[in-house]
Length: 146
Image: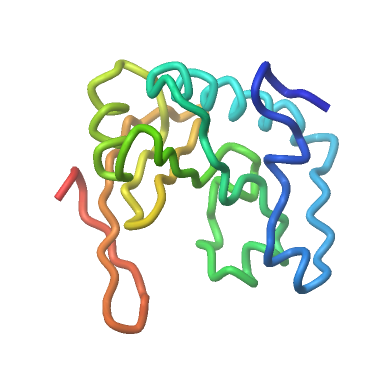
């Protein structure tokens, strides 16, 4: 089922981890509206970058979020967030800079090293962060783009 011209439910709930661990990541009907908000936001990003987005992670049920080490308050669990790349445009840092300057309304936009995390939670705080990873892969976050 299409949520928008370029994004489907299947794309926004697919997870390699869920498949490998046999986790049912079906989105509850009550969260479909949130996924539509996410898809509409991703459409704006796709138009801005003028290239397709590769979604690495969208909606995550609680079990999947725990399996991938996500925050217990992750917007992924509400269907408002996605992690993506857009190699045709550039690096995650370049993408986040472009989003920052675009006027697109978002809640969080994070340069996560190899991908971009964006949330369209209705708070729309315009919160920009950069992830920094230690040797073990654990992330810490700083405000702004660094």
